Image (cartoon, rainbow, N blue to C red):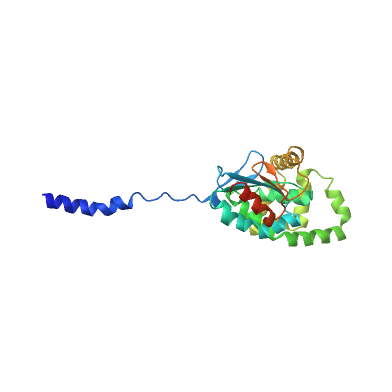
Length: 232
């Protein structure tokens, strides 16, 4: 009897040594939520370092950050749970920015950042179309800017190829047009923009805030030290 008991205990030793399996790590890159301020946050909502960017999808400096800074930000800081990243709209270039913001918010919350990435990657094409439009149809542009917000956004989206672009990213044309004309979405984006200027003093893009403090950073080499200094 004693021998059988000892054999049983020896068989259980590896189980006790291994202990319980470690809990799976959260996928912070896939953790995305809309915020009360009208932004979209990626990452650990309880991260010790909270990064906010006020950005414009037509801003060349924002494009450079999207191309050079977003991937290391995600890989080294968001994925680890150390930093959360919130994107808020600041419409420095008016109607084209407004149209792209409406269309970006047309997708499900989980798709916001992949589509934001794609919009930035396509910025040179949108810019090329805008330059051509300014050269050939300045009177049209002036007329469109006098239209109600939804109609104005739709005219620019049509002319700059934004509706076709969104179709390639899973948004049917009818749905895209519905989003461009959505007064609630338009009012929400306008409020985010106004609050950025009036409440937070934003006057250009990109503007980065780390734990509520505005930084002077405008690119990844300047922003990363700010994150580290904050404890990331």
